[in-house]
Amino acid sequence: MINNIKIFCKKYSHAFILLYYLVILAWFRYLEYVVSIPRYTMYSKLDDYIPFISIFVVPYLLWFAYIAVTLVYFCFKSKEDFLLLSFFMFIGMTICLIIYTFFPNGQNLRPEVVGNDIFSRIIKWLYDFDTPTNSAPSMHVLNSIAVHISIARYNGFRNNRIVKAGSFILMVSIILSTVFIKQHSVMDVMYGTLLSIILYFVIYKYNYRLKGLQKLRKSFEETDSML
Image 1: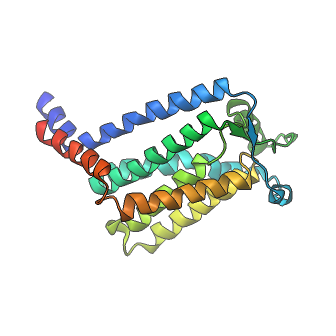
Image 2: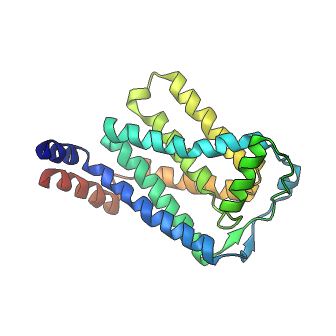
Image 3: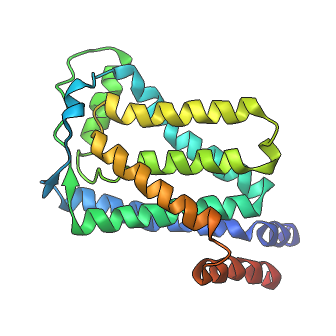
């Protein structure tokens, strides 16, 4: 039994990188607590033309499953893709948190939700739980793009158009949901997309040239050999 656990831990030791989520979560919740009034308000005139559509809370919440399922799948199927996706998201979220810390921002777009349908009730709960601060760049946008890129690039899905198309539709739906339920401004989406584009080139195009990423990847290989 113990030997089987050791073998399992050795084979999937790269999964321990997910512990960094605890740092991300703690940092984010701390900022949610201390930043009650944002210093910078994110707003675009385009926000005034975007309607509030409560049903889009569904893809907004599917974001959590989209990330979790993809990470778990790659953790067992492809260490390389798992680590690249993890680097993409964790570096991106760390950059977002640094921006939130030194440039506290938020939005003032939330309407009064008067409906009593299931979607409206969920949004009311979401508004109570998640303050309209720390919005730019949008982590929802950043991580949705990161996940879809990893799925689209995965060799195992090279000929699976259904999975790639489904992922693309879900990614777009999640991004749209951020503005349709007034969780984010168009500006948040723009900055999240821009950060994703930059990280795409850093992680996927130049990752073998960057010494920092090379050392981090090597550390996981050394961990495997020691276990």
